[in-house]
Image 1 (cartoon, rainbow, N blue to C red):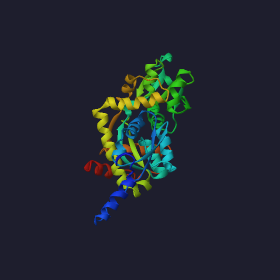
Image 2: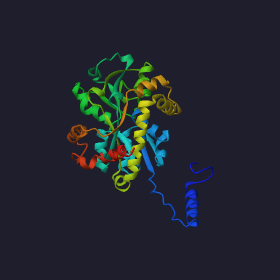
Image 3: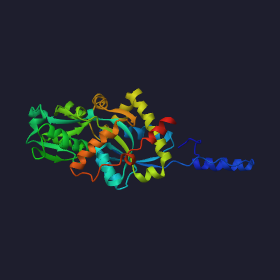
Image 4: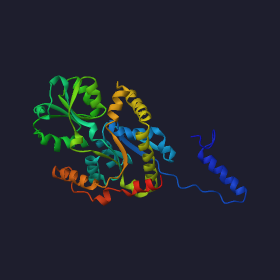
Length: 332
């Protein structure tokens, strides 16, 4: 970085200014303790794109934070990386967070966004299916273990008469599902943006049901308990960067769309900016900690407990830490 002049590093600058101070008979200036580098996990579907934008926007560097990025197809994989302590921070929806807390003590430091409108059950257009009930006996692509996968299997499917065994669940990553629909190896998919918009715009699929009528799907930013205990100042600075990014999503959507569009085109997806903007418009980025969060999380924890996915209902005072975002707002 060139913050201290061409060819001058931070270390050289501090050394030089310290030496000058000693020569002048003054006590050298001691900088504040450096913030901890972050190993950031995120998913490459639309839920992870606010985090991708955070990493590419310069907001973290502005707050004095360096990072490594670890991209995976879906949030439940990031959660597993965090349980294994391979990354420090990661983003995923409530059910995956609850499982991560149960298995690895993960801590929610903020709700970053709401994505219920981005998640949908999409059927192949050529099958002329218009209702979820018509998927009985069909092959449904699902990212098993993901938050929307759990919501579909445990809630949405049964409420429409689709219990396990009434359809063939085809396990695959969300980023492979559109190709599977095009090849007609699956009849429908439980997927999220931008893949739903791509399938619709390419004439491959039709959305039957989006999850927003069942669940707003808040997406958490979580941290490992060790990182929370050792580096609280880094977490507060990190969340200040998130507040900056939230303003960009509200005030400069064209800038956000351009950055995220470059990501998908670099991965080989043929997607127009218009299609991407359609997908992004279904994400509500609003970093914070809603007051009604605990009842919502208890509802999902009850479901996960009954289906033997967790051992116990979390102690929310340990699992959820709204104090960090409160400090970030106070000092933004």
